[in-house]
Amino acid sequence: MNEVRAITIFVRAAALGSLRKAAVDQGISPQAASHAVMQLEKELGVRLFHRTTRKLSLTEEGQGLLDSVKPALAVLSSALDDARRSKDEIAGPLRVSAPRAMAHTVLWPYFMEFAELHPNVGLDVQFDDLFTDLVGDRADVGFRGGSPPSGGTIARRLLPIQLIVCASPAYIERHGAPRTIDELGAHRCTGYRRANTGKQAPWEFLIGDEIVYRDIATTLCVNDTDAETQAVLAGLAIGQLGSFSAAAPIRRGQLVPLLVRHVTQREAIYIYYRHRTEQPLRVRTFIDFMVERLAGNTNFYFEPAELRAAR
Image (cartoon, rainbow, N blue to C red):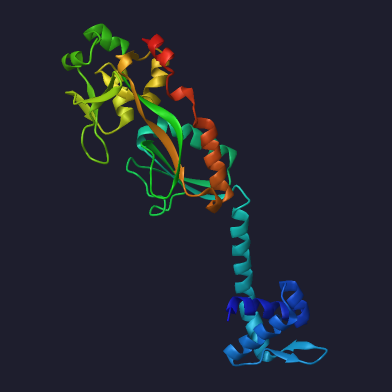
């Protein structure tokens, strides 16, 4: 027996004074309504209604049950209504996971814009450079830099990531600029330590049609891309920076791209999520908003001609 269904029919029959009217109210046959109430009475071991051919009235036990279950049914009905509305309203909690590497330069301004546009959405952002399992971490949407995530999620490519060797004008004035990859060995260079492995990432270069990796001796190594960018901007060293960090300062003349013919574009920034049909409107709206703002946004990377001209 479906107890919640039977109790609902019982409450509606008591309110309407008729099992037939309760059946119409619930979209079932009078026989089904009568059977549900009889099963409930059998389960409880008490009679809930006095029945005549013309009248239906509560027994003392029926009145006691009605008084007890009405508040609980009201709470249940409200909860179900809230769940239904969540599919049609841009409101409620939204948990997002994103890497620190692109948090401030790429994502955070758009997160704030979305929060301002949709004040009824409770945005809960977790910045973590480790890959987030949406189900295990109970996240609605994730962002990732690198290769597309797998494992039952939908991934959409937003932006290419170019790895650009660059230095500040002040560094170049003091130390000169390398003209070849081999000449980097004579310069001060930064390094980035990956969160997932704890190892320093090699620099990568496009040579002909191949990507070649080089372990560059570094004078400063960090596990934070913003800190690495700040060190390069300050003229402490040459760095190989992601285009999402380097594009704006290069365009402002604060950084100079070097060895541009060796720039790689192997990886990308992705947004990933579960199937949209399973998502409430607030999640679908956030996904659409971020795709609209970021997909192909050239504020965060260069077309080849622009990169050559910047040098």
